Length: 199
Image (cartoon, rainbow, N blue to C red):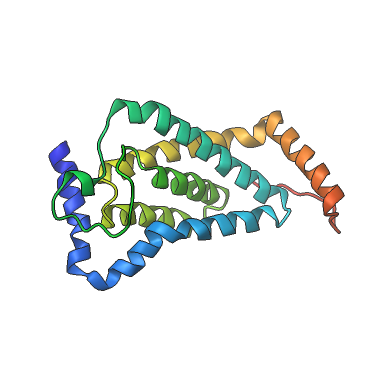
């Protein structure tokens, strides 16, 4: 299994040596698309549409659940350092501290949000494509093995499906949103107070 992991890693990471002109683009995807994701998430929230807010809540709680499972359960079952620590001649394009890279936190984050956003609007396939690109980019820049990324993606996908089917049906989350919106209404009154949830 370890040989397959390393072989897959070499196949992707070595692309950086073969196509060096692509490295700046891959670095941007690996490091800075998280800023874009945060900006879009805030935009969704402040549309003040109930559907968008349930979507953002679902994504946020998906990430929390997936990160807990990844950090405190799955990471205890296996340990490996980043490829640039364990292997020679790695195309390492970004700085990262040496620690347990299994599973990939970055992948968990992106798959948590992107898969939830896609579940709320299945016509927008750009979200899962973005998540996959980020996962591949983390291998390309030398900070994760493929199994780190695949495991992180699977954890996030499973959690996304669970939370998608729970959030809208749990009174706790409805109450939390109602309390928040009452506070928000006092600070920033909305012109149209009608709320519509379209799942």
